[in-house]
Length: 170
Image 1 (tube, rainbow, N blue to C red):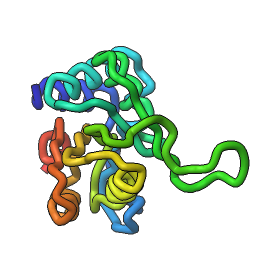
Image 2 (image 1 turned 60 degrees about the horizontal axis):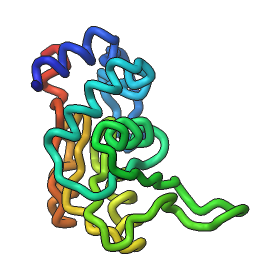
Image 3 (image 1 turned 180 degrees about the vertical axis):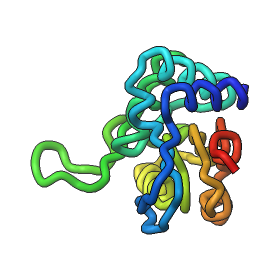
């Protein structure tokens, strides 16, 4: 499965080479653009199916922006509800960072790319504050730059579909 998904991502241009600054602030010679690849329905569907096959959960959740299409794809594939984790509280309408019912439920967090783990740590904490039980994060690509260790400190397993080494040229 890893080789098939890595080839699928690569064939849709997920890896860009150059000089990049990542969300974590780190510099990199490559950028993994899963968000753009997920705009392709066939790719999104395949990834949603792969995640559904490997995880046990009651609700799937994603942090805006990259995790949202993944959460929807997994929800459609699994016929289970999804939740959205906003980046912050809104100042109008219904308050709260979480959209959807996660209280008391085993919640799977999904993400497009993990590097240091900052975005998913925010999501884990927000979900737990809302009463969710979170012990697994599935990421499409793990850059292998600390997210696994950061999540382990929170007693959460990081499960990558693909690792950066499977995608990036030497």
